[in-house]
Length: 367
Image (cartoon, rainbow, N blue to C red; front, side, top):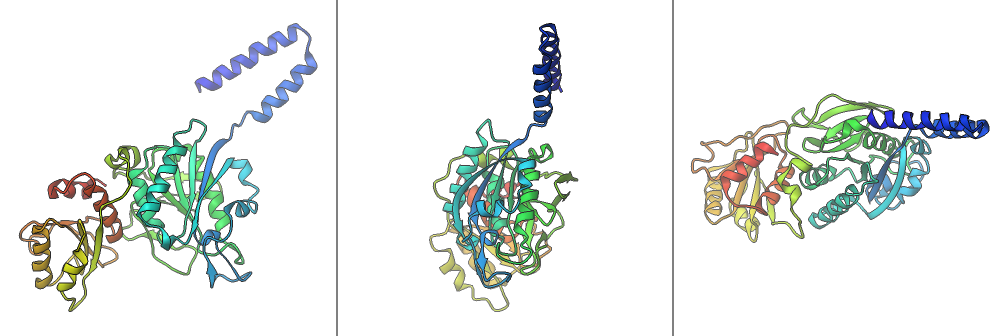
């Protein structure tokens, strides 16, 4: 409001001076220009990483395509309305299927986002990404990006060459969201099918519908959109971005954390082989993060050797707490409401700072 007051005062004084010098025609031209430019557009950087949104295949088909083969700049040409939402700057960082994303690519993407967000002339960032691993990438960014400016990830379930591709509209809404003040300090979010998701809680629940995302614990949706209108109905309470201790560090590599899946009859010896050269291990158990006596004994042995063990569940809608019956020696950490694969990310980041079980356990309730 202060800036608007000063702008109006300046215009008023300028008008008085112009009238005093009888420069009426110049005044009319000036007022026209001011009226046209009174609505200042935000500056949004779109960072392309590939995925189905940039995929191509036989014209019209939604299957049998190659991800990351179409330049996002070409997709933007099919959304001319973007120019009315924001000033767009394109940055093509990589062009890969999201199954090729790994820790090094996460770090590279995070560093580029931090560089762009540090610019005074950038108001928000959109990242185009494949849907298969977007929940992992977004959570890593949510913990490590050091900005409160909007960072929005989006993608598509249909390739760019499909009939009624969903990518262009998702990009349109993602840009509108990144340019909206409501998205400030919401952490990293994902935008799909007019729904705004928290990076911490989003999960891919469908592999053939365009409305493919939700939350396994009903916490993911932060709001929704109606065309370019943004409606934020809740904000994340877990620590993220500038509020995360992991956003203050530089990373060149991450500790190695493996994932072990328990099933009826699963041999415990496999744990030892999996844990070789690992600093930590996420166990996907049954029910409340459960497993056999043989597995518990082997996991206790690994914990005593210095491997940090986190318990999770294969049940889609679950909460895993610390459990004395399955962890009488208090060796392990329950994931709380995190999915197994996000728990792996949090554990990796925790291990860059400590191997203290009590401190890592606290992190699983804060992040």
